Length: 455
Ligand SMILES: Cc1cc2nc3c(=O)[nH]c(=O)nc-3n(C[C@H](O)[C@H](O)[C@H](O)COP(=O)(O)OP(=O)(O)OC[C@H]3O[C@@H](n4cnc5c(N)ncnc54)[C@H](O)[C@@H]3O)c2cc1C
Image 1: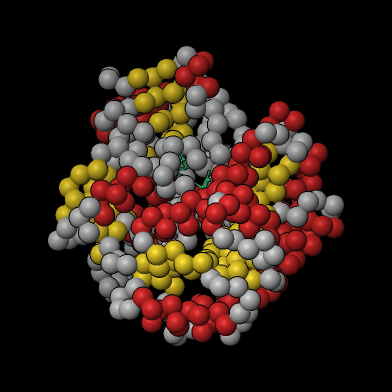
Image 2: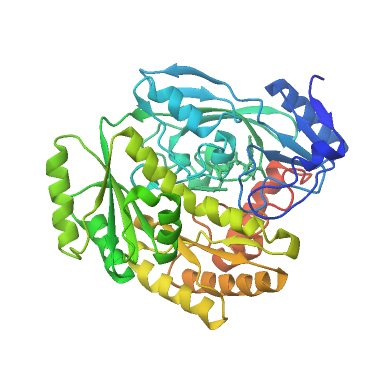
């Protein structure tokens, strides 16, 4: 076998951490170069009953791509981007290809791969599919699932199976969850099979996009603007992102020249694709802004370089918080990030409740930012030690119970992994969990794939 399988401690340590703050050292690390290598590894793992946890770039925030049980399977080397077909708007990729590299390759042919996790510069398409990753523009384009046409999957037994999305527009055969088995693997966090190749669906690249960052004195005005942007018929944003006062502080520090006013208390960033006239679009947005709070001139991000700058500012928030959290690892602390979501009209009350739960326990206010257009903020806390971590986790659980009571979800974006597993029953009932367990047993009867993730 050509696969490099290592039990060397230094190699294993290189794969012991993801972005969750957890550390788990695998017994073995395998770095296959080809699909055949993966098949052979899985056949051997099935016969030895060796657990196998897949990993892409290990940017998971939930401990999903690390393990201390058996083998860590790094798919990074299967990174080809091939068969770009402009006519059918598809491309074939290996799981180790970096999302931003795929976007660059298809953009050169005038096409767009729409999913845009903030971590796209460093994360892999295998990880994005396995987590059904999403981002700011999911507001317009949907999450990764919608853009996956076919998958080649190495099953727990080592068998290679291709799943292709059905093109049917009508179907009444059997239960809906069995109609498109490809959907079982998207979002399955490595627990049902190893994705070794994907065919992605592409869209025409928009000709011009403009970004607008609107500053507000009060959070309530900003959240009112979020609802107005979503509901107005005069505008059609492709993303609606929110930054609270603490997130704005990080944004100002990371981009001192960007013009983020000192006395602003919140910001909403929107992007719109321009099909006709930029000025006409800006006028429509200005009318909407002025109907709510005309205190600040919006910052305009026009052109590729300016849009990249806006994206860099947005990325500086999770990146800064991850870095801060990492400094407290020695004392048992870390960053704690939430990715709950509620129906978008309930976002304001949900944020207020979440803040008050933290304040009641004497915690520093979390940094709140994210995909407000989908009712989906991120709350980031920094636990400075193990005691504070426990308090934060209790506050997060209290928040999640409240979020579920508002019709929300405990995890809208980053999956469940190992860290959020205990919160699955807050949202899913016994029947839903037992149906998932039945699928898992059927596809992975020995329970060797990604033990500890989700179930
Ligand atoms: C700063 C920062 C910002 C982030 N922003 C976002 C965001 O905006 N949106 C978002 O959705 N996520 C975000 N994330 C989370 C994370 O980046 C995404 O989930 C990403 O898609 C994971 O990709 P990865 O290559 O790092 O996968 P990994 O972390 O290596 O793996 C993630 C999961 O996928 C499984 N997996 C990986 N490859 C395969 C494969 N080939 N077959 C089967 N299973 C596989 C792993 O077992 C694991 O369960 C962010 C993370 C960070 C650190």
